[in-house]
Length: 110
Length: 114
Image 1 (spheres, each protein chain N blue to C red):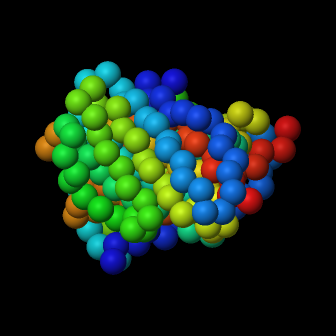
Image 2 (image 1 turned 90 degrees about the vertical axis):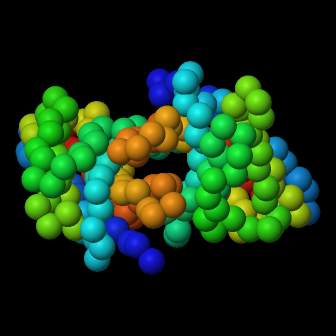
């Protein structure tokens, strides 16, 4: 079945550093979504990508839809402590539900 | 605040029992999805309803069932509970229109089965 592979699994960075994470799939997706989940909360939609090659920003977050349509990237610039959380990539299955990657856990040291 | 509400926030029960989780979607969203999140399995899709009708099924156990009511709220029923059913259960909603796959998640219900 469709699977999304996220890397890295976890990151420990210093406040102010830039962060990059990615998501790959063996099959083509026509949409890529990035979510952030904080402890005890539900995933929050950060960015939605609908077009191959698309680059979209949301504040300090920038995400790209890979031109092969099999990958996507999320960058966070100048990280701050409130960026801590787990970042998930997601794409729609053939049924319409979302398939999620395992997540990248981000820790930011002040 | 996503606009999706879920109750209760926490639920502690014993093996063999039955519980009901409730979800109200965002205003205007006709589609509701239920997901289970456990430490080792990540976010797993259980079931989708659209305007009262079941649309898609994922890895939902036969002991679990759901429904969506005319006011569009949804309930997930979990019966004959086992220790392994302990997890976070999330509801998400969307408009489910062509080309729009964005889903908005509620705060979840943490189920603990003792």
